[in-house]
Each structure stands twice: as C-alpha cells, then as structure tokens.
Length: 187
Image 1: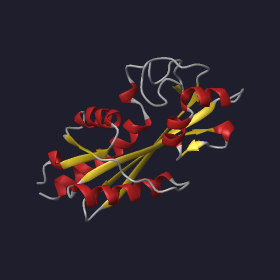
Image 2: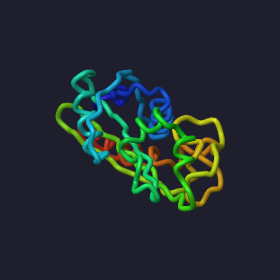
Image 3: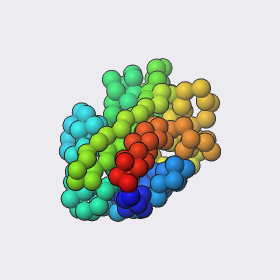
C-alpha cells in the first residue's frame, strides 16, 4: 500500500499548508510541504486554475501532490473577486473589499482541492455561504478577518472551529474519502 506520507501539498502559502495538514491529520493522512510559487493561469474557472496548477505542481515535485485554490465570491460585486481573490487581497486587501460593499454583504467561499499522481488528476470542490463583516475582526490570515460563515456571528479569524467547518475542510474531507479508498484498493 502506498504510504499517505508520500503526499505533498504544493504552495507558496504556509498558512494554507498548516490548515490542510491539521485537517488531513484528523483523517490519518500525513501531509508534507513542497514550497513552490506555482504559476497561475488567468481563468474565470477555479477548477481550471486548480487543475492546471496540479499538473504543474506534479511536474516540479515528481510525487503525489495536492494543491488548493479558493475564491471569495461576493454577491453584490457579481461574484468578484472570485478566482482573482489572491491578486485582489494583495492589491486592495480586506480594507478595499470592505470599502466596496454597501448593503448586500452575502458571499461564499469556494475551495478546490486538486490531486495529481501522474495517473490520476482529480478535483474536489466545496463551498460555504456567509457574509462579509462591516469591519475586520480577529487576527487570521487572508479574508478570514472579514468572512462570517452562515449561522455564525464571528469571522473565520475569530472562530476556533474554522478548521471543522470551512470550505477548505469540506473539500479536503471529500478528497480524503477518495484518497483513503484509493490507497486501500492499491493493497
């Protein structure tokens, strides 16, 4: 049986890796970090972006890999920033997003986990609905200080249970179910 410790998370973002590692540990999957700044194609499709990054990541790592791509989609901004979330965060940040919003603050986070091992290239998608807060709350990274998941009154940055309910958790759970079955079938 292939050891789950042969699985690498490819990213330049150590925060994403730490979250993914903690989440996958709960499914008895050991994740290693391959720090690499992956090229990202410009596309309106998160799945297409993630799939291309997974292919490129495997070419660099030469071991079974996963990558994660996600986007914050804000209803009143027509789904913006969506697949451009990373760029928007780097340029205008949370303050810029808060400045753009008026009344309708509905939003959702979508996460795509893409796996590649030179035979299989598979993606797992999940989302979580919520709203954008009126101010930054908490000290989390990325959009965590401004995203309030549905049925909660605190941002991801304020919640100690974020890794049990986030879009990333849901996508990693789908991946882990598939991956563990794949490992069993290779016995």
